[in-house]
Image (cartoon, rainbow, N blue to C red):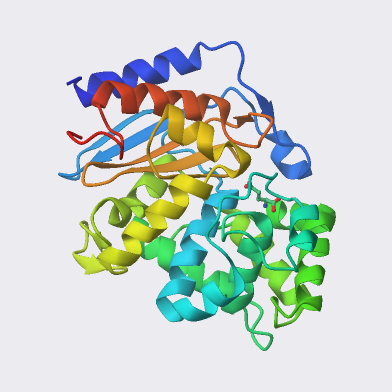
Amino acid sequence: MADLATLVSGIAAEMQAMPHRGAVADYIPELAKVSADHFGLVVIDADGQEHSAGDADTRFSIQSVSKLFALVEALNRDPDAVWRRVGREPSGSAFNSIVQLEAEGGRPRNPFINAGALAVTDLLTSDDDPRAGVGAILRLVRSLAGDDSIATDGAVAYSEAATGHRNAALAHFMKAHGVVRGSVEACLSTYFHQCAIAMSCRQLARAGRFLAHGGIDPASGRTITSPERTRRINALMLTCGHYDASGEFAFRVGLPAKSGVGGGILAIAPGRASIAVWSPGLSPQGNSLLGTLALERLAHAMGWSVFNPDA
Ligand code: GLU
């Protein structure tokens, strides 16, 4: 098996030299300002050793990776409420698809497409206290990453709110079907602010460790969620974490992972490692192009795959 430290720096060097890096998301104007040249990778192994390379400590917009933390928070509060509103099937459709939601009566396929994430966020949102939802998600990621400086980037949140008409359409449609129960405005505001949370690969990899270790955060020994729920969240990440490229990601990488249009991906090698990668250029489906390739290289070299009985 490859030496992890050498592997991580070798992969970063290879990715930094890649000429084709994908297109940075520009439908959120603030994200279009980020250079496609960035690349960061952090792997935290089961012993807590951190192997990092490139822009490992540069903060970026975690975007849809936040949907994972919102889901953990909502499931810990009331799992039945979550599963009454959203399904657990891969969508096979774009992350912001409207047509599937209408065809299926306003019930989103899963918690990781935008519609499903909005329904989950609605569960965390209080009409009386518009900051409560994002506050809960921030508290969770800060405690997991052991870093109270993690915050929402206000410029990104504002930029998305100013242009987020598709998300507004999804939320209003779900309100019409009773899937979103509270104020649509409060739900959207919470969602835009959670997506605008800025974290580095190191912070993200630390925040994901509990998913590699049966729901227990090895850094603190704290139980974040139950072993059974952890397995199920990992199953959802594997089947739905990359939108309509989830099958391709499972085929190439074989690990549960959640991507965001900021170019970040959090991937979990159960029992082995928590991995965060960042490269802002995206594939046409909205997943980091080089981030995916880097994870493919890493998983292959380490033999890490949920489909590998020896891993
Ligand atoms: N904030 C983004 C949106 O709602 C999240 C999408 C993503 O990261 O995939 O469009």
